[in-house]
Length: 230
Image (cartoon, rainbow, N blue to C red):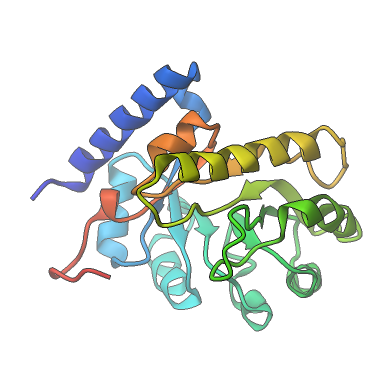
């Protein structure tokens, strides 16, 4: 079985190639290693291999690994966040990738001591199974967030449909990039909105070609523990 360092090297080579095809610099792309399916020891391997950006989607996993690793990593919360869970995580994360409703924003404003870098989650594909703000409502949602000085909108996030149709995936990512450009051009003080969080283990190459600046990659880097697949 390959090591975390070997898998990471392979991922980086694929990103380099995608950047070459798109005329981009690999330095524009940040890898977030999603460690939700592994324990602190495997997460530490990721850090030792050169990646400091770790992603979690549940409070329990964040708590366990943050206790073991702390400031050796920058912490990304990538899952859907319930408003009642905000107080448990907000002081321990560096980025929230899933801001998608006013009630969540209100709770972050209430609980945060410092401004939180957030991505607005956008449901570009329009799938009923996915969370996120509708593309046509995103600009007004971000304008509304200007009332909250503890929230800084650094960019947008989306997930592509689970399909083998590359054009459907590409169209989703392209749609997010175009929306990001539109919002960034508004010059909103609370929303520099320069970043794009999109692309996972099965589609990060397409995401990079379409402008991703943060890719969220789990099993392709960290693998599985104890033979489990989840």
